[in-house]
Image 1: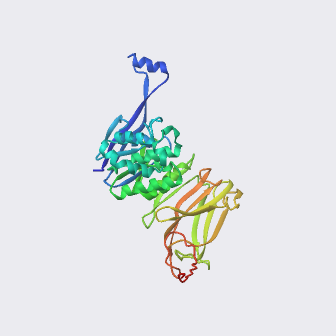
Image 2: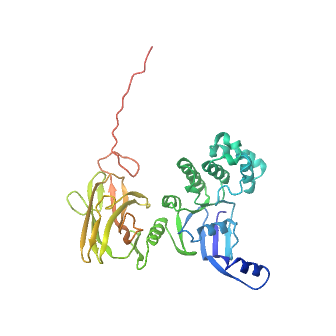
Image 3: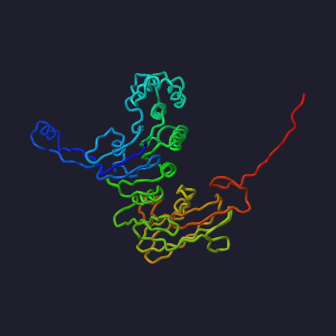
Length: 410
């Protein structure tokens, strides 16, 4: 139970030039439509208990794919086999009636999930408690705020742990508190063996939850692999423009480095230097270091911004800054020039392995004229010698003050 097998899956919609052509076809007066394929030749397998993220730009076919796996949309080609009970968080609250109370809508929603009235009666206190909407639970849905509507819908949809959970951007709705709460419930399902298929533009969600990611481009599977590698490649594609290239290189430690951009400005070298100017690959917590980046200009560049991002081993961003935000952009650069950037900072981060990503762009974001984006440009290790044994990615150097008083006697 919990396995998903997708083979040569495709979905096409009919397109008509006008309403008259649609009417003519309905009346049997020939074929007047053309088929628009939103998905073609999609094949992959998801094992029991595996978490897979679907990544792609708007219009890539992500939501259509999830609906076909959930069974709410019929494929035009190929097959989908899903073993086990499926819960789909596709359009939260779809089918709720505004004149019915939250409790009544919860009962109807649970019935649509296939639960019996006896099961619903047992689960209803849990649904009410998780939603945390108080007395509104017995008020008409039309009196709810959008956030309360989301709370109720999510609580109903996840009332029972499914074998397969399909999530389409459901983690990005509601207030911050409920997002964290919903996120934890989904992770709890995953720990208990639920197979997870998720679509989200939240990089943190994909990298934290998923074991694997699939990139869809124009309705086809472009890549499959680890979330970090897929998201790095997708990030580069989002900045891709005419005459730009996107390529990936295998590093010695097995990681994949993604490089993209026009090439008008390129990184020639990057080093991490200690307080004495010596290149290092390992540094102690709290050490003062300097990141040196050498950039060569290959074509005239009207404005240049260099940014760097520190990431931990799972690809989560730890710290990032660029010369635009530091108010140090360069202007009117000519071919052949060499620029040497130096960023000095203390290593106030936890022990472990880290990578440095670099961005050469015209403005604050590499999406605006990407000269070069380079992931895993530098790898280094942080160890902890001489500091307290703390937990987490940030060393704050906290100092404790403790007072102890004798109990009062009367």
